[in-house]
Length: 483
Image (cartoon, rainbow, N blue to C red; front, top):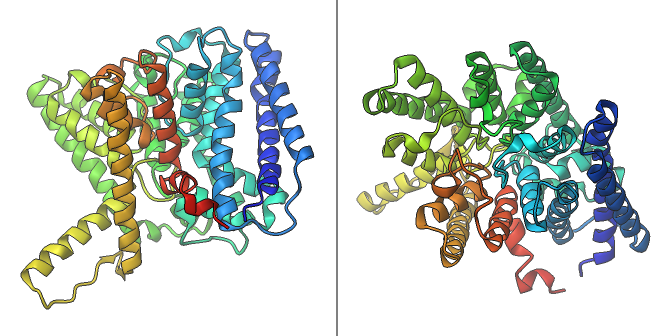
């Protein structure tokens, strides 16, 4: 039986911690004397009150959380964070409805980067900082951060760790989960700080450098400018962002091997990193060639735009430097396909993940061999290791579930009157946490024109994609609630 009171107690702790993070942009607003302080103060107060009440009226878990309780808690945390995280937007005059505020909040915490705003610059700096901080907190994982800082989760940490951070399912870097979570967050913080300094030296203000560093390492995509990174028109800034988008798309397990264990050879041995790099460079080269041949771009401009846009989409960051909707249809289709690929397993990037795409290709190749040699026994290998059949079955189930959710969501948007291209692109961009897509939600548009119900559908897609579908869907099944 699921202990709802115990789940609610831990959830209250997370909500209380969330109110603490709101103090960061609030203090910034008080120090700088700008607008936006009152919405943050109201939001922090309400969130703190709700978290306190939740912990007082529920009971502290005396035993470790079960797997089902962990799954329920993770889903509850993400929706609670979306709701309470929307309060600064709700109290701001720049968001007309709660739906818009909730959509912006969920988009921030899931590191999707889709916005309903047509003019981002109108937001006061403290509210801007909260948008980007939401990216940064959600990028590595709200739950993973909680495991690192909340001792309450010491007993049930493994269940939350597995439910939230898929890249760590098969590997722990430290003997204790708390140590692993803390080690990964230290790397995350260090990379963010380095990028922040680099962007400041490249010409951004400190405020812009902090905000864009939050967005880049989280592979989120929110920007302080409506024109995104393209508004800066700086090759140096774009180059820095490219480097850190690439690093954000790399598994943080691999980052640990390189930066902490000082084992750079792990890069060459990691098959997923090799494929991730190959897909990025190959698609960039193809798109650059097409841009030179069909759009009249010079070599330098074509390579610059292709490298940036391919990596922005593949890592699901969603930054924009050029309006790719006016490109030749083939590069647009390649970018749409890259939305499904994503970055490496265990990175902050979304998508199905490169390793799963490679594994899926190996499984299809094995089926072809079986058709030719009926009596042959063929093993599927990745990185020199034989992949277990139950792993292959889990992959096929995940892909099937992802495409079912994708199709149902597309049908839902189409039923609301959204055109086919926008429906397909918006759902893909939301499920795989990318942000800008094609059609009415392209790189120069926003999601504000969509019906309110469509925004709720897409918000659910964002959370489902962030938690890789099973975690959200399983709590809706009757079997989950049976004793």
